[in-house]
Every structure is written in C-alpha cells, then in structure tokens.
Length: 428
Image (tube, rainbow, N blue to C red; front, top):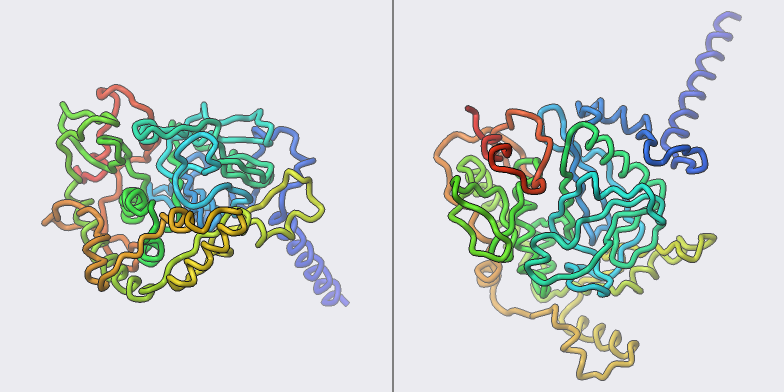
C-alpha cells in the first residue's frame, strides 16, 4: 500500500511539474501586468540566462532580419561573447526589403543604430516602444528622412517594426535591465536578411546590393567576433572597427581619416572571407538564370490573412518575404511584374522601370565573382590568432576582450574618457 501511495505522489508531482512548465512557457496575460515598465523577464528566460552564464544585467544587442521577419536579442555571457537569448517573430513590418529613404515611403529602416535609455518610451500608444534612432549619421549624410520609427507593440506598422504587446514587454525588459547594469548604448542591427553567401547571391540583382554589401562588412565583423562592432561613418558610408591615430576623427560627410583594421581581426576576417567566396561561387551557380521575386506588402499580408480573424482591425500581421517570395526564371519574373503593373492599372511600358531593382548581369560565375567581390578585409596578420567557429563552419579566432563592454558605438564622448576599442583585442 505504501508503494501505491508513493507512486501516486510521484505521479501528481510530475503532473504539476508539467503544468508549471506549460504555464511558464505561455504568453504573459497582460491583464495581470501591474507595471509594464518594471515587469520582470519570465523565469524561463532567467533560467536560460543562468544556463548560458549571462549576468542578468549584462549588455545586449538587438538584430533584426527583415526577410525572415525575426527580431533577435543577443546577450553578453560572462566571457564577453554575445549569444542569442531570445528570437521573436516580427508581427508586422511595412514596405519591402531595402532601406528607408524618405518620410512617407513606408519603409522600415536598415542599418546600424544606437539605442540609449532616452530611446525607451514607456508611454507609447502602442503599449511600449523603443525608438530605432533613425535617421542616424549615415542616414543624415545621405539625405534620408523620416521620424518616429520604432520597435513597438500593437502589431501594426507604417515604417516601424511592430511586435505583439507580449513580445515588446520582454524586449523592453531586456533593454531596461541592460541599461540598469551600466550599458549606455544598445546596438540595433537592422538587416535585410542573414548575410550568408547564398542569400547575397539570391539578391545579387537588387538595386540595394551595394548598400547591403556595406552592411555585410559589419555583419561579418560580428559573426567573427560575436561582439557588436564599433561603428563610424565617413565619406557617407559605414566603417567598422577601424582604428585611427590620436589626430584622426570621423565625420559623416568628410573624407575618411587614415585608418586600419587591428591585425588579429583582419586575419580572422581574411579567413572568413576565403570560405565565403567559395560558398558564394557555389551559390551563383545554383541560382544561375534565376531571379528572386520580392513580394509586395499586400502579398505578404495575404499569406497570413487568417491570423487577423477575431482580432481588432488595427492588428495587421504582414508575414515574411520568404513565405510570399519566389525564385523565378527571368521570363517568369517579367511575367509576374507585368501582372503586378496590370493589377495597379499602370501602363505596360512602366514594367521595366518598376523592375529596376533587377539588373540581369551576364557572365560566368567567375565573372560574377569579380563584379560582386566584397571590399578586402585588410592586411593579414602574421601573428597567432585564437580560435572561433564562424557561421560558415571555419575556425578562426580573435582575442577575448579583457573586460565586460558596457557600450558599443555609443554617442560621442571625450577622447580622454573613451577607451580605444582595439585595446579589447590586445592581450597586453
């Protein structure tokens, strides 16, 4: 009889444990949230942070992958490397792939942005919001305009990255805790897609390709180091992790000062680039004669139309480009564009103009490699570089930083107070 009682007790305990797990993983009931600004992160996330050796108030970085419709929160471990702690499906983003250029174009920003405590808006009409910081120095230097572009709740967007209220509650908490820990600037990397060789080859004919190659340099630096790169702007372009002498300064529209990539980082990037070039050549051959059809916002919304059922009319999920896009032959692409123009009651002679993002470049894979080659990473170091596994599976390394970083690409501060970032790469 005692054995039966013990077995029953164990069964009840197991059932309760399962129930608790289910409740803990469920969405937060917003009605139970008394103070959304100070709402703690769920215990499941805190447990995962502890498992990954991430201090609760260690720095974070936010990465948006527009095509996939993903928002990732990366957090620093105790060894100062960053790792994904949570990935969210973006509920709504407007426009299409490509940067925001002017006010009213409904485009969501792409680029590298700094989020400070001042960018947090606890009183947003979209539950909670974090201003993206658009336009930044790069945007301003290139004449791009727009305002009030946010990461916010409500799942409704016109140039913003909109989440559900439950999601933004957590994202806000991640940022709040990091700022409480001393981080002064959270880096936001808003990217069109994961900048792998295959994705770059798939989008090789886009009018935004040169802009994306520039963003890819920063993406590569992060993939190699797993630390947000230091971002500056000169000659109206982004530059990453560049060291200058004591007299050198960066001005967004002025000529770049003499600068160089730290040798250990340059060596790691050179190794990374070699693997990338092999993968890119393979991808070009795979997509030879094919064109990626980028869906309209309406086409993306149609894919997830059923998600709106029973919701407020303002709730407008937009789906992902990967779900609604297609890989087509050149003739199929032109046919799709003609149908699009016809549906918009536009003359047929506007088809080619509207298809300007596609530039069918002929040539072999080798020729395309020459056309699309990325800027050189810099001189290769002859020193020994510790090991890190890159996204492509190669093993390269960079020295582990000596201390926990509290700010990345922070707003300008005096040179006396600012520790040069490349000292993080030094073993001295």
